[in-house]
Length: 499
Ligand code: FES
Image 1 (tube, protein in one colour):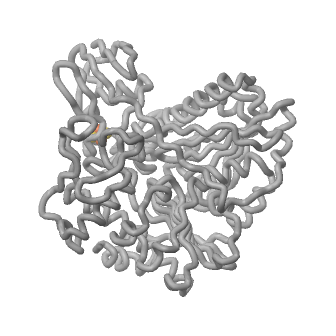
Image 2: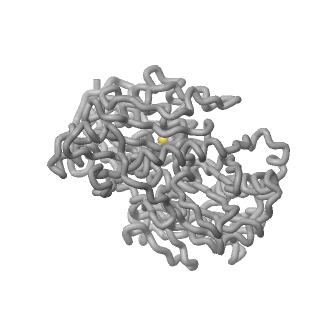
Image 3: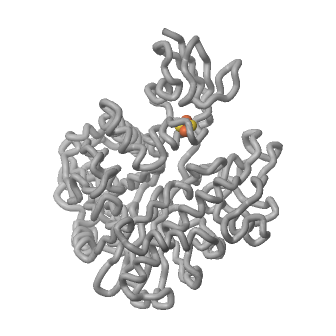
């Protein structure tokens, strides 16, 4: 046995670990948050920790062979994912029978994202949204994308249970914070509605997500599921209702279904696109009678994974790049990396200046921030490999848009609006997105950021049983296209790789 001493967030703890334990596993096992987007494969280089007397090490490649003392990176807050109301339905308050479980009932709407979890606490007697909190998905230490998480469930004994427990623990932490702060009893929390992608919902309910990773990508369940809070061991009323909203397919989850259902009709928008660029890119083309949708395997590049100095939309991330090494960071703190919107600006600028050619060629890496200006003493670059990752991601999305347009015989001119969902949609600069070809030419002036529609859908589900009808209607109208089965997709993908 060796002694492992961990310094994290101003606290020190120590534990005995077996010889030859991998450091990342030891950190995970003790419940500390560490960003490990490649899931411990040693390929992303982002799971660095400081080992006293040795310096920074890649924790997933480091074997503990003696007593060591480590310092974990400062925990960072997830950026608040804005809920928006301008484009969302207004429904009468009707939270349903669960609200009768308490004289002073409360509900919680949860957007269960692969990267970020958003919790919205609601007083059910009035429908008032009292508080929103966001945290990073603690499963990030097992990989940035859903495939890494599914692999973990498949390949590690008890892997599914571990990932499920990570979620339940973070749910309970947030529930406890809220009840303590509001001075209410956990029994007063009687209704919880959850939207998320299909993989996250499987893991939450302890259902094996394995089939989602293999052809024909068949989910074990898509339908709405309602369980008692006690079944998930949640810190709330044990009889409380936990509703998991329905998904459409393996890669069109309840986050997209409820997100589209949450949108109020706008008479001027007869045909419009809805795109949620998160860890994946889901695209829907909404017409008068059908909703055509697909999921583009964009990968998590726009969330900073697979990008050398990429990061999520967290404090210290460059989220706007103005050119000539001028930029803005989230929280106005010294820069420590670049998030998706900053990357798009940066690539657009490098294209304009000719540093990157139209086919994506870049002779050498570009220095964005010298080490003396950065927040962690490390220079921030964008590399030729990063450019390649962005080409792959944007090509997947724009090819998906083109395939849906072709299926409906519509053109860009027939599209009245492009609703951009997710945190990404709030920060992205439309002209940069069009410059790199992420948005087809002619659509940038039609972009409308609609915020975290998955969270808005969960809020509507908590407040009103009437939302069920809109969710059902949305599901019934949806027509899913599996892009990998589409004969034009490979050609489209190759064409759209260029800028
Ligand atoms: S290199 Fe360690 S998690 Fe990616």
